[in-house]
Amino acid sequence: MNQALINASIFTGEERLENKALLISNQKIHSIVDPKQVPSGFKITDLKNLIIAPALIDLQIYGSGGKLFGALPSEDALEQMENDLLAQGTTGFFATVATNSDAVVMKAIDAANTYRKRATGNFLGLHLEGPFLNVKRRGAHPEKYIKKGVLAELKSWVERAEGELKMMTIAPELQDQDLIDFLHANNIIVSAGHSDATYEQALSFLNDSVLAATHLYNAMPPIHHRTAGLVPAIFKRKPYTSIVADGVHVSFPMIELAKRELADRLFLITDAVTPTNEGIYQHQFKGDRFTMPDGTLSGSCLTMLRAVQNCVQKVGIPLDESLRMASTYPAQLIGEMRRGVFKEGNRADVIVIDENFNHHSTYFSGKLN
Image 1 (spheres, one colour):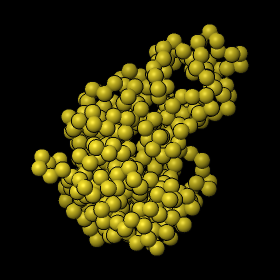
Image 2 (image 1 turned 30 degrees about the vertical axis):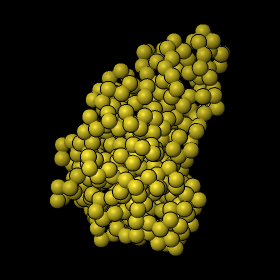
Image 3 (image 1 turned 180 degrees about the horizontal axis):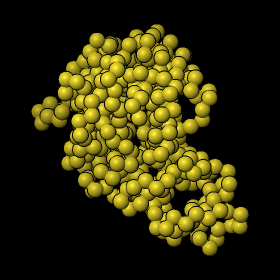
Image 4 (image 1 turned 90 degrees about the horizontal axis):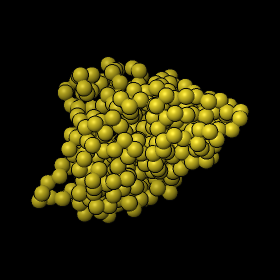
């Protein structure tokens, strides 16, 4: 179906446009034109002063709707995430698996492979957060499953994943270089996280074969005026860096600092979990956060749209830039250049919101959801 979305502020991923029409044809962006130039044969939708932007992309989320894929992986949990996230304006996500047993990792890989063979939704692949982490910065990850990576084992996971493993958070300072090189050579994004790397160690690997950093400030050494650590190295090297913008995992002034330092390399994730009383990750909802039973802070209760709202209202980042942090920049990191910006031929993945950040609708490959 050929569609024309009119009477909305258009955030293209590059600029803001007013009094224009976004044309969608064959599931792709056709063009942006004056409303009077909409060709015949296009169904016109009047959005009545709403806002449209490239739909959102979440590269770190564990589960939704009571189904925690990150600890109890299944095809049903992936389907739950797909449906819930589409309803929130997120048209691409990495299902994330936290540190766990080898059996759970393999179960997640198998669920992802099977699911992708029967579905073509917004699930883009797997993000393994662990188990190759630093125990000193484990956070809510159980110590008994944290280990140094073994290349032979990792190769077996990658082969089993058949291309579904897209990203891996590791503590690079503890890993052999051949393991990191193997991930990089197989187009798996290596992200530094749950790491106790020194400043010098971090300078040696960031933007070399380690192209990203996971949830800035969390599970890494805090900034200290006499001992520069991982965070100052991230500010210097400026890899793509995710942040949890909920005001709980990271305070809003520290998000402002990160934005000043990292500019277009800082992007948003939810790091979201869902309540569960099964398995080793029993996330309990406590008003504005999730914790483990012992009180340890765990995942967030964010949505991507709420993260955008927080960046605008609590941090003071302009709306167009906050939207890029939730779509354009994560798309760039994962090499999905046909997402995150409205250009001719790109995917017609569109989020529609109002000025109060209420979700109105989502177009996924041009189809209204």
